[in-house]
Image 1 (cartoon, helix red, strand yellow):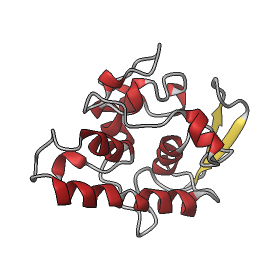
Image 2 (cartoon, rainbow, N blue to C red; image 1 turned 60 degrees about the vertical axis):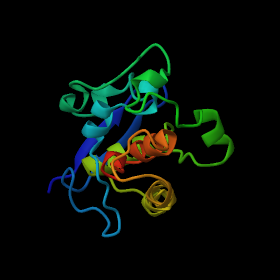
Image 3 (cartoon, one colour; image 1 turned 180 degrees about the horizontal axis):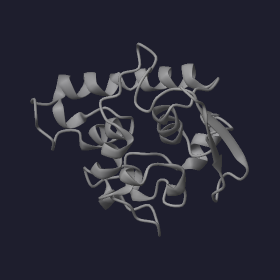
Image 4 (cartoon, rainbow, N blue to C red; image 1 turned 45 degrees about the horizontal axis):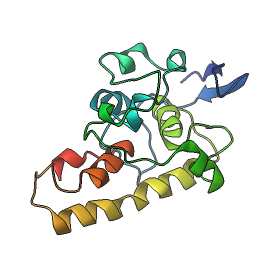
Length: 168
């Protein structure tokens, strides 16, 4: 596969270059098995619709067809479960969860990984993704299968991390 160069210039990142070294949606680390693609996540509604509204040029146009977005502000009503289930980016920065190459956080990393970028932060991000299974265990313990009204905040958080919490 020829390595494709991607140049990024948006509100949060200027003159950043990365290379797609794997085919899109393939060759993931064996233990990384997200249930949702970035396109599916954007269509369902994640991060209050505010996520990535200024950087669509970096990603396939198809990802944004029917995406639930709100460029003006973070609007929890745009989320699949209609509630806020994420912390502000400032908290992520304060806790040191932001990798310098992905200033928007985990979902930006996942979008780039999905497209074929591999980077030194992959292991850490995959481990963070795996840690979200604690929320699956809580939903399974406290909710009837398929009850989407039970623990909606946890279910939304799982959607934000590419787990399809509608299927639990």
